[in-house]
Length: 121
Image (cartoon, rainbow, N blue to C red; front, side, top):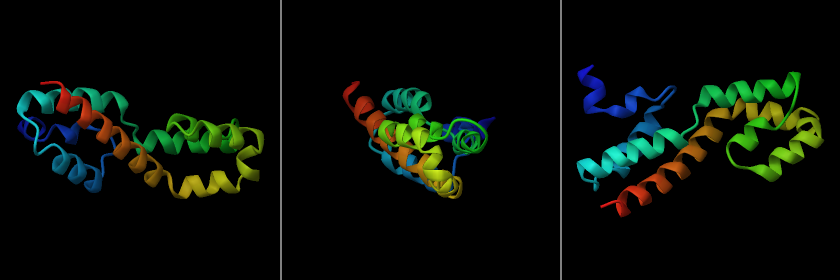
């Protein structure tokens, strides 16, 4: 349990070393209260790579494009929806790159959360 108190990011499901390093590097300049605020905000916005994988797999059996809608790419999500995931080619590409989709989205959310935490005090 002590490990989670020293590094609360370990509690995030599916966190990669790349994401953890980015978060630790990005929060170095924050004080303890700002770090707690950052963690609270970021944990609400973050998307797990496993969740994106599940949403991508749903595209094969039901509705394509959910993974794009979840990460805020509304136009691509609608395009996937109406073209059956670009005839499944786009869905297959997203299936291979689901970790990249999650990391890119989480990086944007970390930056937004950092800005909010920086203004909190």
